[in-house]
Amino acid sequence: MRSRLPLSPIVRKRVIFFLIVFLLAGGVRLLTFNFVRAHLNDPAWFQSGSYRVFDKRASDILDGTGRLFWIDDPTRTDLVQYPPAYPWLVAAIYRLTGQRSANAVQSVQAVLDLMLSMILVAGLAVTAYGWPTGMAASVFVALSPLLAMVGVAPSADAPTTWFVIGGLWLLVVAAKRSSIWLAFSAGIVVGAACWLRVNPLYLCLFWALPLLIFGRGSRRTRIIMATATVIGTALMVSPIVIRNYLVFPDFTPTGGTIGANLWEGLGEAELGRSQGFAVGDDIMVEHERVRMGVAPGVPFEAMWPDGIKRERERTREALAFIKQHPVWYAGVMLHRMWGMLKIAGEPLPYYGTSGINVTSRKCLSPARQGGALGLVVNALGMLQSVTRYALLPLAAIGCWFAARQNWMITSLFFATIFYYLVPGTLAHTEIRYVLTLHWLLPIFAGLALISLGQFIRDRRSPHLKRVGDPA
Image 1 (cartoon, helix red, strand yellow):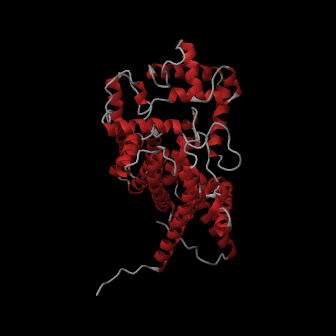
Image 2: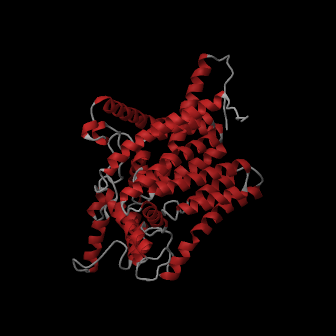
Image 3: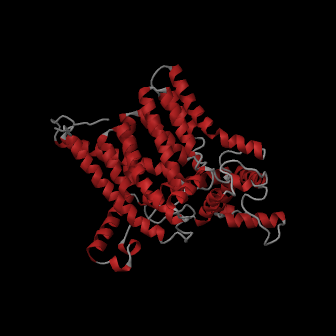
């Protein structure tokens, strides 16, 4: 006679709830997938130029004409433009599927991101603020146009965020348990993210501060935990830094485009444009071609030839201009920060798309745009629009509730948000580069909904005991 472990009513309700939300997220992702698939050759919706670089390197690896990690030719400074791991992922997908196309990468990443985004955000929210918050946050994740758009695109942005959020989850558990080894593991995981994108490179330093100041345990334990987090990241990224130093030789972190981003970022405002700065690699490259006297038609790219030297020159030129106009540039940064947060209404120029609200016209074939299916899809898009506008105000309210409920854990969330919102906007950026920020906002929005709902219930029935369900 087989015995089954009975599920309590509350566990059954949670399982059913998450299954429904997962199906909702799957529907949104599938519809967005159809839209992105139809626009993979449209630079307005997909960074096809960057993908061609990854495709070339992945194909070279599979064909045996490219090295997996090492760089043999010290003149190939273009090979440090991006970290090495995303071409590995693309090559692995090509090998597994037997198709060398962005379509194959899109299909695999879309499935992985659907599962990981739901698990990681809900798990992090439950660990930090309890089951009700995790359940509410999962709904915002399921409906998010931005998370759907980036999640179904064949790019390094979503995979990088998997590791960053996974590292943050480990760090939250480490902070709760005062575990040095978990803090070290969190540093390792965020270091792994740097093999996909350079953006999280210094995040470990911003995590170390709240661990040191607000962490539990003795002062010695807090110092060791903070140090372990930084050491974990440093160990993980050190092979790339050492390789670059030995090959070129130069101290180059895991990716080398900060100078280009600073230079192009000055072109976001009129004062910068009036001095010749402009947004766009093509414009920057042509500007340098003319200045360096390189003839038209001669191969000349953003990071080749002499990419590291030219990166330093871009950085020097941009910083000199910023030093002359510090107050103006502070205003540029504030505008850029708002562009990273603005997910509703008309998007600001230069910062990329915040996703689409699904509609039958955008996401279905002409034969399926009418009838009941079309009505359901359009209704889903309307619901997305509502959550777009509600998310940021609710997240702001949720930050207050989170700080009151558990300041130690919330300080780690705030440090992550600050990192992407302030240092992350020192140079030109796009909303997809701060995707981690938009994986965290649904948690605060979910906490706000739960806390406001509890507040209303308490006001209506003050004699009832508050029902809590912390993790």
